[in-house]
Image (cartoon, rainbow, N blue to C red; front, side, top):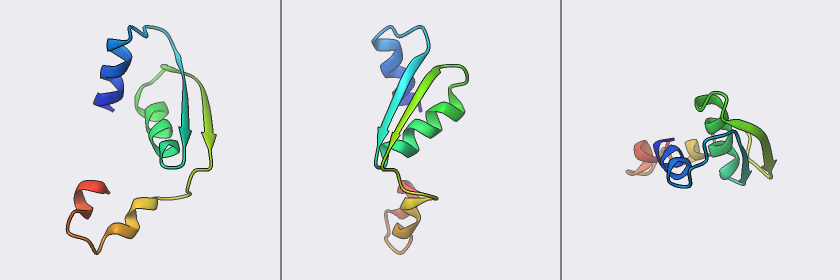
Length: 67
């Protein structure tokens, strides 16, 4: 979320914004909605996966960084 907050600050978005997510971006948009209280004006969620889609990576060494 720090990256998203930095982007919003760099673009001088000081009002509520619409968050659009496609595929894994749906998870990002939902996290933004949950963590950036009051910043979301609307959500557009397209073709997202249910649950925790990255949990299937668990057998791989880099998984803890991705989950």
